[in-house]
Length: 333
Image 1 (cartoon, rainbow, N blue to C red):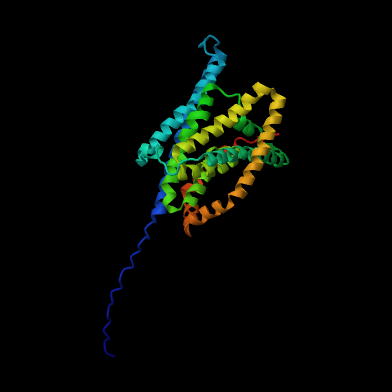
Image 2 (spheres, rainbow, N blue to C red):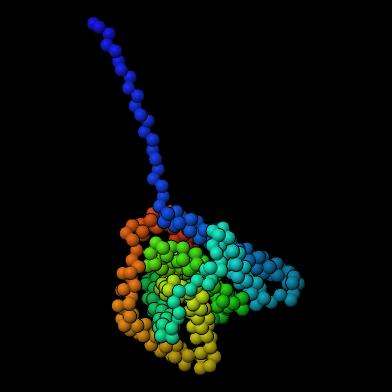
C-alpha cells in the first residue's frame, strides 16, 4: 500500500467583529448614565440633610439645653434647604461633565409667544390639574380595595403648609433646575432624532423623576406641554409656565383663595375653575386637532427609535429606582 500524502489546509481564523453602536444608542446610554448620577447626588444630599436634622432632634430630646434657640420651624427649613443645595450641586455636575453650554440652553429661542397661545397653554396647564385631581381620587379608590392608600403622597404633592425653603424650592429653584435637566439635558439633546420622540421621552423622564406615583402621572402630561414650549418657543417660556404651574396655580389657588374667600367657598370656586378649564382644555384639543396632527406627522419618530431606549439597561435602572422610591409613598389603611 502506497503512502498517501496528507495535505494540510490552513483554516482562516474567524474574527468576531462587534457591530458599532449607533449614535442614538450612545446618546441614550450616556444620557441615562448622567441622569442616574444626578439622581444619586440629589437623593444622597437630601438624605444627609434629613439625617443631620434627625440627629439634632434626637440630641435635643435627650438634652433640652442643646441649641435652645433652635425652633421646629428653623429645623424644618434647614432640612428642606437640602433640596436647594442638592439640585444646585447635581445640575452643576450634570452640565459640567457633559460640557453642555448653559447659556446656549437658557437662551434657546424659536417662535415668538403670542397672546392666543399664551392663553391656550395657561388654560390647558390649569386643566391638567383637573386630570390630576380626578386621577388621584380614582387611584386612591382602587388602592383602598387592596388595603393601601396614597393619602400621604397626595398631601405631599398638594400641601400648601410647607416651610419657607420648600416654597422657594418648589416655586422657583425647582422649576428652573428641572427645566435645565429635562428640557435642556434631554429634549434639546435628542431633538435631532425626532421632536415627538424627544418630547415623549422627556415627559416620561420628568414624570418618573418626581418619584411620586400620583404626581408623576400629572407631571407626564404637563411635561409634554413644557417640552413642546421649550422646543417651539423658548427655554425661558418653559420655565415661566413651570413656575406658573407650581406657584401660580398650586400655591396661590390653594393658599390665596382660602384666605380671601374662606375654606368652604374656596373649595367650591376651585372645583368650578378646574371643571371649566378641564372642559376648555378638551375643547382646545379638538379645535386645534389639525395643527396637532400636522405637527405629529411633520415630526414623526423614525422607525426603530423607541426600541433603542427600551433595550438600554440604564433606562430600566432609572425607571426601577424612581418607581421604588414612589412606592414608599404608599401606606396601609
